[in-house]
Length: 619
Image (tube, rainbow, N blue to C red; front, top):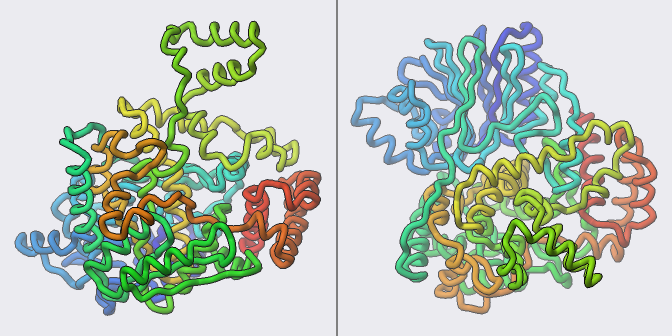
């Protein structure tokens, strides 16, 4: 786990030197164990290292092939590197290190003209840049699901890329302008949806894609997508058995490291299952929990009981007051505004975990694979609609509402008219369109493209020719909220605390398996993740396995009312945020006057934006 960055093109010598220093500084939190550099007259590759496998100097990056004609910088882990290395050694390749990343160099030597083949041989999470010195050709790639981040800017034959957004913006190599549509989408959803970022000039490389740059010409290609198609499963027991067996193999692979490994453990199904499987391979493994004693969101007691049953070495971070404790430390290097408040809890337990381990497994991704959220439940249509041809339903409901005076018929009619993308957006939004717009001054509103994210959602739904309605929805979830929210949160909050977060559920083999499972095996009677619950029940009992989902939440709303320190910090930040030129001061005053009743997501969003700009100025 590391930070990578680089730039290609005709830059002034002084600008290149400054950019190298700026990138190294801005990415230092991702790689506290060292940094490395390759540079020539056309390209510079920068690497900051968090040592996980091959802790020796031989594992330092950039890595090179036998004759040093290829240079590589990589962020992530290749879990099948040992099998790949065995085959490459038989083919005559010579290795300089025990690093898992070095296999990429030698696979490229055998597949230089077929990057898709190379990438589909890899099992893992990664973002890397490979420079073919002889061919003067650059290959930049991101893993299938988007576990590891990669951002870039390309203009006039010049490419700049990095593991995070802010290092590109402050590199000194481009003039970055704020994208106010992204900021609007941030207040709408809590995070900034890809492929856009906080800056107009910077985009994220989509998951499962790679780019090549040669002769100042850039091209982007998709090498993997979540497959369509269901297997003919005999029964739910067959699904459970195969899912459990594969997950056990994957977790075992994810536990491989040359440093201590632990797990995040909440009161939920996902982390409990990952921890239970981890214990079978690694008895006594360290487990870590965030706790809010006395609050409805507190999962500490149940997590402690699970840890005792599994005999893990358990640790709890308990917070009883001041929601913003550690906030400045945890959010100081956030690369763009991010308003998912549970990130703060994750940062705290990552900091706690760093005292004992350097790698932590989490349960992220299970909800998106098995329909675990309430938004994955489809509302039942009234049975009388079955007797009305679809083409006539709108007119019939409109007439019915007029005759009967029942507004419920109008609501039903309007819902039927919504696109799949709009229905999805309504389910994931933390704010409505009107509220999100009210935050901005009039001049900024005119720049905002309110339909941009909706168009992307509709395009994703239209591209998925899967008859299974739930799997269509989960596909879009995997492409959007999973990457933009869950994986961003996991990556940033673990990296700022010097640990590597691994997500076994999102191994591409498990993803492919789960998308071959039909909806009725995933959700039943309003309950999601049936397969995982049944597997967990065999290990830890029905009470935990079928416990009502609480999510990885935080008590911000209650503490804004009841905790003086929380309210004081919030008010100070909102008052300061009024100075930002794009915020409408009267809206900021509204939040100040209505701290107890306003939506906590919007309040936290303002605090995070203000903090982001304060930290931007210090670089």
